[in-house]
Image (cartoon, rainbow, N blue to C red):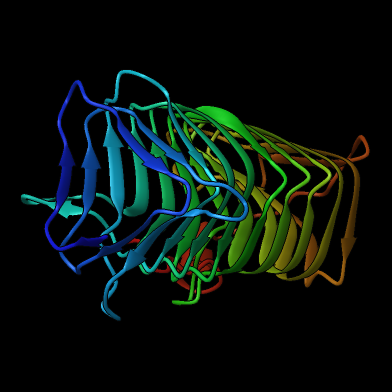
Length: 295
């Protein structure tokens, strides 16, 4: 199907897309749903949401759907960010106040600030691969849910980008692989909590960071080749206070700085607290932790 104009699903309706369906979106044609969506692809016949031209397409938003959405075996390529009638969202795929189950899917070549943004929603994500983003891969704001399996590869090609970036959220991450992430594989901020286990992080700027009143529990994991830090905890926004990381069975290999802890925050490896030091966080964000497309 060729989608030449914005595709708007009105409130009170559900959008169903069956296996093997391919939608080719024009550069100005976003998908906006005010009800739940069900994209029911299969391994042999996925649902494909593609750009009709090299200019890309804005992407999709599900807003205040009133019921849970589900996406299974869905491929999304070449999104920028959703712009509709004067308002803009940062993500190529967005769920706002709309719970979602997302499984066995692939998001490729996101050109916007986030490939996937979930806001004020519950989510369950299984075997999602996000590959080749300009900036962040997954951003959760005031959300709660889980990520099982999957991979985040080649994240932040514009010069900065986090694989998983959470604010005001509660999230669990299990068995996920991160490879070639320009900034942070796990970024836990603004009074968030994250429990992560059995993750593999290879070739990243920072393996995992907790900041601004957040807590990260990381276990049975590997951080290999971090160009800045394996684990770090600090304050970026003083109103939130210090952060902490509790790491058990975490192996840090070939990190420029295995552990960096700002005075007042805490990182403990197998129960032993790391030394703290004064850290100029503003200088870090002007140099090492680049903002990518985020203003």
